[in-house]
Length: 258
Ligand SMILES: O=P(O)(O)OC[C@H]1O[C@@H](O)[C@H](O)[C@@H](O)[C@@H]1O
Image 1 (tube, rainbow, N blue to C red):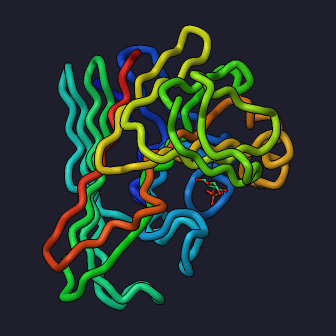
Image 2: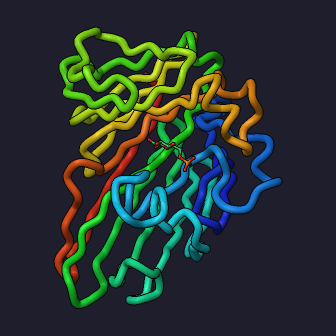
């Protein structure tokens, strides 16, 4: 089985296939022209989500070279295992030590991503972050996210929005950024493609799309490609995870057919 295309920088999975035919992720065709994380696939965000803190946007883990510990495949399964050891004092502004591991596993009916964070230093620390999948869709404007109904939400561009009342979320052609609180399982529906996303450990979903105008501001994304993906991200934002020395966090995202 061959599902994953990946690279050491950020342990970023660029492509993943579910079964024989379903491409899970969008990845920008311009990615190779730019340094840093690719616009697409599955970036890992740690120890800070976006600009919710004083560190660099989305934290430093996506800009560091991880070590590939294992990559194995047989007829029914493919496995990847990356590790990042962060030594105390290595990253300015973050005086802690941690071992991050990203494991990915593809089988015929699901692809699963597991991020663990182990505090390897002498002091407690807290972090935010998560996984930032760019799910490939045929047309963002025909895409719906189900399973968010009743959840509290905060919307960066519509501060009056507080709760999802409609059963389905549909996306506009303008920039969209909404953080949903809770909800361990959602469905992403676009035409024939129906994906079930199940998360554990992470306790919020960030739904993000740059929209038509936002895409023009992103140099690493062709202007018209904003319609080809939607980010539905299992994250930790509002309630940072605290880890005592020796404690470990586990966050998981499973993607299967709905
Ligand atoms: O361009 P970046 O740094 O990869 O971030 C993309 C987007 O990622 C989303 O998770 C954030 O909610 C947005 O605020 C952010 O713009």
